[in-house]
Image 1 (cartoon, one colour):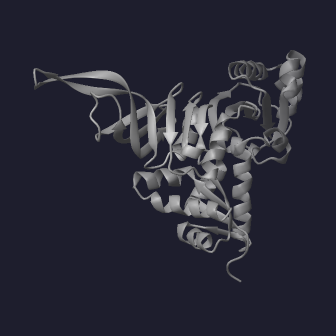
Image 2: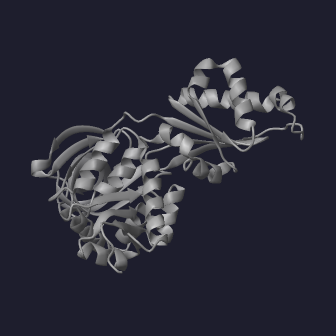
Image 3: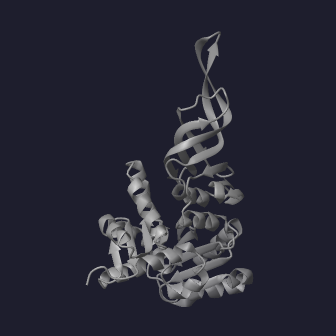
Length: 357
């Protein structure tokens, strides 16, 4: 995301969407009643000599709407912001409903009556390009899965399988075509996504064998690689790798790891019946007591509450946490930690002090 102009004193910021992840961030930054200004397509009914002709044309226009609903679908790559038109050209009727579709390269202006600290931090995070592009490969003897790490989770890229001799002799595996296919796939992804770091994980010795082959064929690729241990391929393997201590040094800048650590810390406090609460009512009581140090909310809960038009209660909760100098983190359900938080009702808090003894 590119921040073109910001004036938080007047509650206004103008941004350009540079990648799909930016839309995920905006889906949690834009609230009901926010004023959104952007270029859009508006259907206009033509009049002929004072009578409606029935003809409709589609005309580009810059409109400002008062937000009522926000929807993000990663598969379509579009953020839909719906609301009532407040400003626009003379030939556009004010006070009617309209949807602005935001996608890559769109430019919009967001104006809020109040910016919360966590919303500003999300903007900074989305505009920060210093984090490395990371590719994860989890493999075993004849299967491998590839995933691209995202700020909001990860994207599964492909699964491949090979025919290798069903023997455990390392030399047979080294001579097979499967490793060559893996290396070609790694090289392709590294070039396509400008990958800076590659994590290769497997049970047993498969990762070491593959790494030795890479060292022989592509030293530049070998320099990007960190090896780790896992027991699975596919999404389960990716989730497993993200928890490994040996890769945290590579991923320590990534929000995904921070989110995972926060959720694991919450689960530990809940298990000890100590400084952790979960569920909306329990968390609300902790917020009222001023005891919340860190509030964790799943993006799935935000989406559901907005769809049911019941988001205001959560919004007030977050404002109260910030007023008491607490921190707020929106956790994506695209990864394992987010799914765990979703299982707790989508909301939980790490406390400054225990509420019950």
